[in-house]
Image 1 (cartoon, one colour):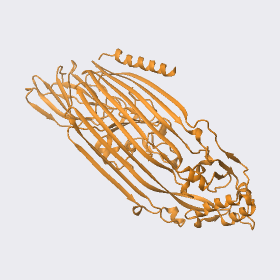
Image 2 (image 1 turned 180 degrees about the vertical axis):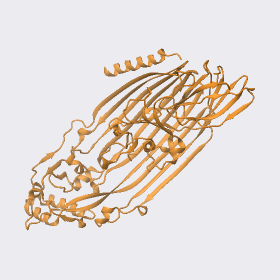
Image 3 (image 1 turned 60 degrees about the vertical axis):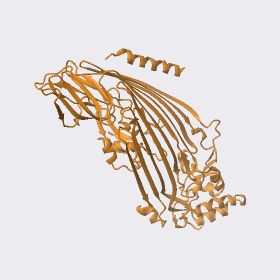
Length: 607
């Protein structure tokens, strides 16, 4: 019932968009716009001037004429470099190169000189850096800047940190998400790629792959970071909006390739591992990217391909607390003979940890036991242990642009991402490691139709699927190594067991995760009439989430006990195990929004 009501609401909104208006110069979160006034040497407006805007990359062209007020506009333009030609009988022809930026309306006023139209004047100059069309606080990062910014990991969202008011979040500082804009939390930011939302609907953070990076920098043409959005197409999140537009092919074949490597020999030793007498662990990082694009049919159809990936082995340094030899002897003297094999198995794991022999006895670590026979209060020894695990992720992106004619343009884009995340590297035994296979598939269709020089519509359909299930790397091996999750409730003794041991005190267990399916419809209409510039649009999104929280702690069981309970073979706190009837729990999330605005020029020279 709710689905039918949502569909009816969406249909009415779309119908309203097409019926309300008949005449816009505008930009959206995936396009830019160009507007201005044509005047003669005295400053008087020129009506009926012929304007042609031609893309330098694809050769596509658009035509219009100036209104009675001398105003002109080109709406919903793909960001990039264009040539603007202006001609009028009795005046010299003006030709200039301009740049259209993502999410901005570039104002370019053209003054024509008296003469014959056969005489051409080339105007040099750049599009003004300060846009005065609205009150948006926006920072545009073009392709050259994207390629030049030092970006470890090739994370697309890292680029947003060059905008004013944006600062990096760190886990040590309590931050959540990768950055904060003007003090607002990371969950307040909205990310889009080619106009479709790119937030993780489960966490409301930027979407990412197995590496927790959003790979694809070679696919980025331009990024707009809108810190404060006042115009109607913004406003669905309180923080910054990061809009990314992807690259397309052009009339010229072009490509690039890069490769980065960092090995153990290039990395310094970890301070704490070195202080604990641990050998330098093996670490290795390989990262690559390659792209290629060009024409399928000149001025008509274009393609672009991008592949990127990384493969690395990283090491962790974890302060661990292991049972001392005196405490082990005490426990084995207290527990019944029937339990001896279990405790010997546990102690063998602790003693077999790489670097365990360097543990330093720590006073005051006996919990409820108080002290061992002989008076020692050092039941545990402290040492920093290294864990190691590897990550691999790669993606393939393809895009095709097609121009049916001057008034109808379409592009389709697909992306396939595959990766395996090293979720947890256990310092005691690698059998307790956790991983997550994280496939992601997405597709998008973007269609632009020009009804007239003053009426343009842009429609977007997008689909996204990803899976992120976190689980033991090998549950059978983990359970054979130790048959349960065992943690101490009153000391810092390191946990044993299949991955959940690390998170037991926080009641955050494995396996857990989610499958997410998202589809979205976006429509923007741009209409210009006299001094009025109307913009309106609708955005509908549905997310289907299958949450695996109910599957946590189904296997193996988890035991939380005091050190005294451990030493006397009793469970004096709790034993936990879930018996889920269904592991995935379905959740459907809908959102629908609409906007309408009218920007008015109060005088011919106002912006």
